[in-house]
Image (tube, one colour):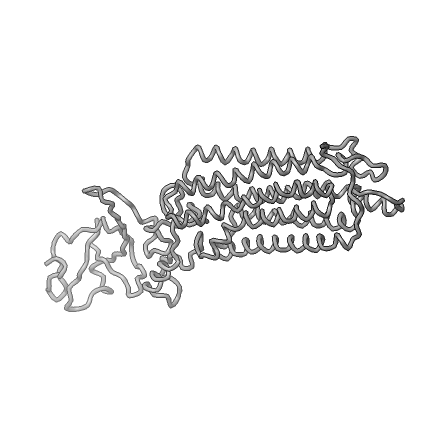
Length: 429
């Protein structure tokens, strides 16, 4: 049986109108899903990740496609049985629709492929911090595959019919290869199946090999396997379109359904983290060396820091959430809200193989003989620093005054200092 068939009979616009309205509704729903992802991400981290930028870029071909599909469904194409003479105006409208359908058949895979890039960038963000060479090479191979398959789809769309002007020829019949576009349909289906299955196998393998709990693995694998539904739609639509001789209304409906499934599959993981309140989140309270915001106590800052603390991701080693950024989230021992800056933390191996946290503290010292810091009849308590004999002092608000010296440079007083009343300094007794 030949692949190409005679053109389908003409149908009134009342039969095509439901397809047009449904396509617009699907386009709006896809846009809402993508915008929800962008807004949710910006609220949580006050910036967009690279995969979010690619998701936003998918909005452009999404709406451009509908801008072309609308006149295509209204005016029709050359894939129709002409059983009565058409006016010059009707011929021009169908010729215009036939030209626009060539562009729409490029914008359709462009939207799908941008959504695939979203998943690819997500994988890059996950495995990029691990430095594993095999995953880096695999991701580059996926990028090359996406680029190659997209070029193949464009070539199949534009190279099927010769001469090229027959793509919009109405009468006489230019032939099925210039009307039905089956080469583009089959090429798109094959490329969709290959790329979507790769985007399922690769991340699922990473999740299965991670140290996540069984429940979390099941959840993530389920979300990642949503691309399988896009594969099912792509495969099923081919015989459905061929059965109706490539009728444009049917083809547009299945293309819209495929975009809808791809949009859900590409954004489910990110939106799922918003719903479950996991993944990367901004830190609401940060360390302030001057004492923090007005009216905020040390205990309040510590409590807020503990509540806003996010876990660091490690797909290949530690427990993690499905949408973490390993380069952004602080480690459990290095909260951004710690009362001591993270630059002051040093980890070293102590005796017995235990990890010891050493904190370096800088203190302010002032002259021990200064009358501003002595009271008659009282001794002076404190430590001395080299080379001058100065004592550690400070105000009630912890604001420094005088020179700054490291605690390791402070030594006990070599000999007792006496106050004007003759009393020994209590710190040296």
